[in-house]
Image (cartoon, rainbow, N blue to C red):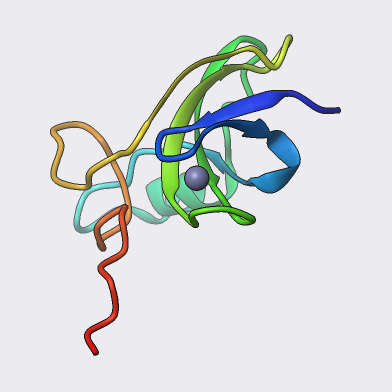
Length: 103
Ligand SMILES: [Zn+2]
């Protein structure tokens, strides 16, 4: 399987340069029930169609970003850097673009 995945920073690259990190999920509330927590940790939608996913440019700029990909055709419809502060967008606690090291 090979297709082009456009990194928001580097542009289109072979998908083998990236790490797939799973579909985007929604974190449960601050005090989830055991059922909500189990569902969040172990169950995925696994849709046959357009799915929003986390990707990591492992062999490039090391940017974490989200892509909308059709799982049936591997057509990538959109990629964008996700911000944790954006409304309704779950994401890492740290900024998606890592800060340069202080020297
Ligand atoms: Zn990149």
